[in-house]
Amino acid sequence: MPKPGAGGAEHYVQATAPIQGATGDTWYDGTDQFIFDPNRGGWVTPGGGISLSNKISILSQAVSVISQQVSVLSQNVSVISQGLSVLSQAVSVLSQATSVAQAALSVRIDTQSQSISVLSQGLSVVSQALSVLSQATSVADAALSVRIDTQSQAISVLSQGVSVVSQALSVLSQATSVAQAALSVRIDTASNAVSIVSQALSVLSQAASVADAALSVRVDTQSQSISVLSQQVSLLSQVVSVISQQVSALSQAHSALSNVVSVISAGLGGVQLKVVSNTQIISGTVTTAVSALSAVLAAAGSYQIDGNIIFNISVADTVIFNMSGTTSAGASNRTAGRYEVATGASARVLENFQGFPWVVSATMATTSVFTAKIDAVVRTSAAFTLQLFAFASAAGKDINILAGSYLRAYKVG
Image (cartoon, rainbow, N blue to C red):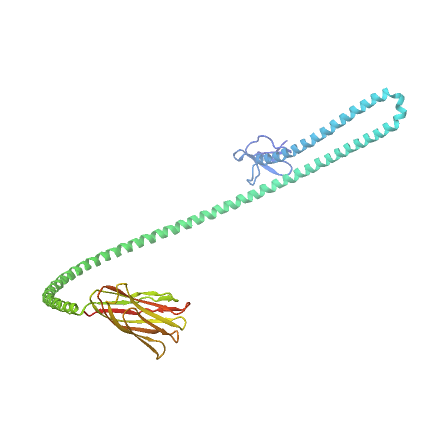
């Protein structure tokens, strides 16, 4: 009920807040004091915390949760009551049966007593359940009280958080002021830098003008130098003309000399030179042509034949060289010559021959590198090809015809 307060305001001392009040009215619920402020939502604490209506809303939600729990307990009690009703109906049926069976009542007293005992135990269990329900209700009330206290503490923490945020906003405002001041300084610095760059561009423009003047002077100097160089080139052109005439004279002399050489070459004949560029391996007793060492001899010609075969053998043994012609190289082709084959440090095999084939057999003392020289003269009646063959005296022996071996056919008539 209202109580007169200081300054003409009204004070209420009651558990429930009045629904309405005048601005500045106070209300005391026995624990806390509240002020009615319509701009802040109604009844609020003097310190400016959360409005009383919000606090009441929060507490109302907690009470609603407890009410739901009490409703569940009420349903449990209803179920138990239904059980008791069913039990009561059973007792009524039993009473009717007892009236009908009065004659047998004395006989069934003991049985009925046991049933009543069981029923009594059931009632005792129901009583205990009601006791547990009562205790649960007490626990729920205590939990509701604890949750209300927790909500009050949360409201206090929230108020402190609002205060911290306010302080943070103040710090941010100060930092913004400092940043604006720094930005102003940087703008002034940039403006000064632009002024310096402008001055530097002015200096650079003046330097460019000076450079242009110097370049003009250098161009005039280069023009004079080019004129002098042009005169020198003209002199060199005259010298080149003289040298060209001398080269022409030399060319004519060379042409005359070539004619003389042609005449001499026609008198002496041509030369065929064949050289082995890569090692050729000849295996065992199979007669094999040394592919690089051959010469084509024309009909009715006289040739000087010479050659030098560089070789070694994989195992010390006998090697055979055979210089043969094609089938046209018959008795009408006359030939004579000799082989000289080195077989050791100072040993030689000399083999003279007349007619075809030219065959030499030599036993090598070691696997070192040796030479076989050919020196012969051939007079042809018909054209044929001269070809060198080689083979070893036993299988498993390889003859290596080494690079640098050659055969030369020089036409002398």
